[in-house]
Length: 475
Image (cartoon, rainbow, N blue to C red; front, side, top):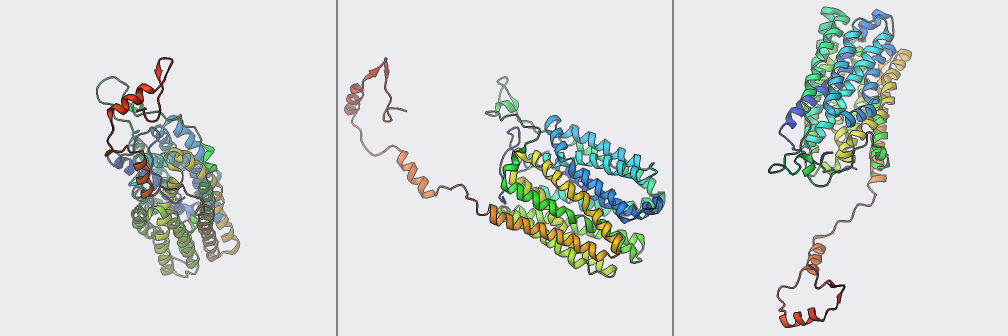
């Protein structure tokens, strides 16, 4: 489960691990930034929305929750679209949807309309960009895949550092409606990133004619299914899916509520929004660092255990952060949460790629995101309900920490008990290989009398005009 899968892309083309892959990595960096930072950055507008529509914490938390639910829950739909139409067309349509949703939200007159525009339409657009970008990254990188995943995942904190203060600035100058409109324009950059997702094409065979391109690369693989459900037969995939689903129940709760927590302490709005900038700044360095460490030869086979430790670290940070009583305590919490959150973000899809391989990754990621969607949908709103009932942020952070800690134990124990003891394919020892080769080698120092050979061949009977081949005479 924790080992790295070395394989080729769905067309049989070996991953270049560079070249145009760096442009694909840049596009994936932008898409990841928008996809993960946007639901958190929108929380800057929650106070204004509460005053505008007369609603509570749980009602506004549904905006981020629906955004994340669409990002996760439409996974199988994205898988089918990618396997049918390819990554680039799907991402172009997704960029248009993401922009259209935010532009339409700026004209909304009720919170339900915000749910439909910002939540459903923009969430669907981000989903149609996020999943295909990861699939393209997986096709362009193999040996350098952990590093590429870490660098692409760094887009989330970079954009969080930028979008959170930008959102506060836009709200101060243009109100939440003007802010939504401008953010909608920024999301059109997803279409630019989609243009970078050039499909891999096999090099032409030498000379003219003779079937160049992919068809010249040996036997063809069977056509890819629109949605490969055979991944559910993989025990490692099932354990990963269960653990990840539990994890996302509490993973996104603290970043959604930390700004409101600071504002309720009497911290000025701009200073409160700066907490997400701190979290994102630490996250920027945590994700690439985790990717580089995971890519080391001695560490990569144990990436699943490193992922389990990252989840445990994140849950423990939530529990200790629940004791924060002033702005300084929240700053310390955001520093450690940024480290642990960055590790989780850098490793989650690398571990999934290592489990299922390139061939099934487009279907596997869609199915995992679907299973996580329900947890994402109820996570932040349940924290909002708990906050509305108790008016104490401490309980929200404790609940989130307990959920993430549980997920780390499920992954660790499941991998150790169910996967670690699974019988591995037997590896032939070098001594056995050498002895086997000796058995098949013809003796080179034994002299052979040509007269004996001629007599032996003449003595062989013929059947139907053809010589009978024996192990000694067959070549």
